[in-house]
Image (cartoon, rainbow, N blue to C red; front, side):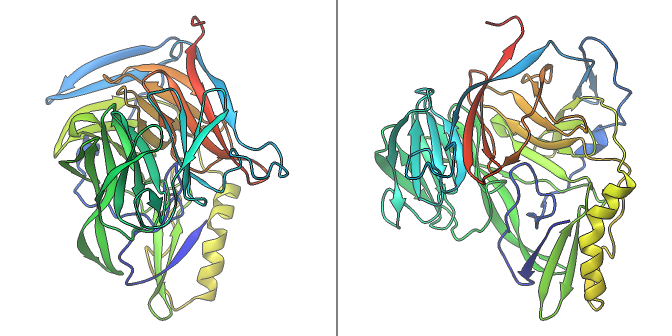
Length: 426
């Protein structure tokens, strides 16, 4: 049960893991979320081959996928990274990878945040060029938080300087535009979200909201393309009021906060999509709502059996909170103690590829999965998800490619390029 300390008056956001925000202080959801009413309890999963049904209920299209899709696999194209601790000074020895992107020219762009530079590799893993450096001037970074392609330009997001930079494929600085700066956090949610060939969103903060433990800022998605901000702003959504708490906030001492994640608790995962929609789900239910403003336009169902939380798993998960609470008897906590969920989460994260496909990270006791849906909500693939520690959000292109960033047992970062293939494909 991980926790973070923060002053009660903090107005920024603290970091989260790439796949979600379990055990970390999360941005507060800032719009009423009633869309989960559309997610009725799932029917038991049907065995055998895939069956997809479409029903329209109250103007909302419900897509239900049962059974198994056609056999598919992820084929590793290349792995970029050092093989041993002695491989020092080479371009594929990364200081810390915050973000990756696939360029339209078939090259891999890696944001090395610790070295304040972008490193470019071919699909053969060979280093092509490097650009950027530490600083505050043109072509320089104070924090290389995220990168993504928009049209024919590479965009970089520097959350400390508060700007989005524009680059050519060769590494030429083309200019920038300003954003709110001095935001703290990791690549899990404070980043660029690519949703189309020339359509993306950046994480942003809006107006101040008052809470019991002090002020917090509204979390937004701000639309971008290769020419600048589009004026589209999406409000990050709020969990249902009756959902179990996914974290416990304790105030103690001279205005300090401890935030503990509740193990296995459901939380909200979401990702902006093309044309101003947001994909959202509770991690406890494989039911993904697609909303535009206050309207739900589509609901994607995928019934899977639930998996119970074991007694030993629960005791180990709450051990750190119980030990801390025993030492801080005067602390005020909300809620007072963690509630044991009825089952483990099913979903870990949602991602949208620039071709409109939905990639879902699914948690299973016998091995996690990637499940892929077409833009209409049909399940088209279900493949094992590589295990390990992932440091940054994955990246996609329009040609069935997936980029992941993992950390090996030596603590070294590697960038893996995968291709989604079906058994009948060559």
